[in-house]
Length: 221
Image 1 (cartoon, rainbow, N blue to C red):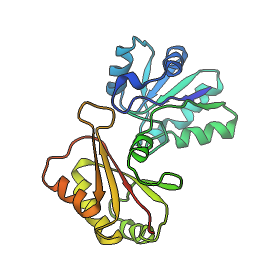
Image 2 (cartoon, rainbow, N blue to C red):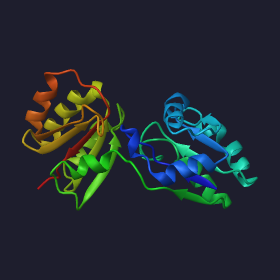
Image 3 (cartoon, rainbow, N blue to C red):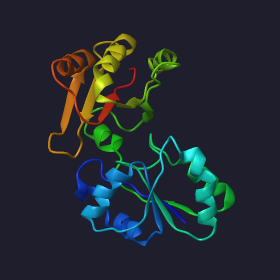
Image 4 (cartoon, one colour):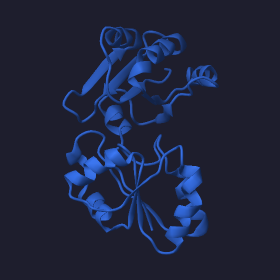
């Protein structure tokens, strides 16, 4: 059995009772960063073996993990924050487990883009999730395609690239397109800045940006 277990995106209280039950019963926890996960597990007194599982080793360890699962081991995959597989490793392992008949179960729980979308004030009935934009190759081509997108768009971004990305959005979508930038969701200094792209970009030019970033942009009307 392979479990995909969402972990809090900030506030440690946002883990579910079922997630804790699963983490306590599995044989091994696959963690994006074992140090980050250890902090969570120690907080809830979960004592289970940890093994690193991230974008730099997922291909290397894939078949070994599947072999252990086929032998009857129970494993949980967690990321530093949120649901595994959403801009984080898990897809390759899930796909291989399905191929060989290992049961896969995903628990419901924290995902950063959901609260960012819902509290943005931008229509949430139809949306597309783009995650992190390509850093170089294909970036401008994708932005050009998205300039015609009519659904609400969701992006992840790092704090050091936020302003640059907002400026690119102004060029592609127009400075008056409505957007919402959420950072430090569920944490003490949570911020949700809403308004036209030009105003939101100006706001973040004047400050040092920290934390994980979710950008919501309205679609073309």
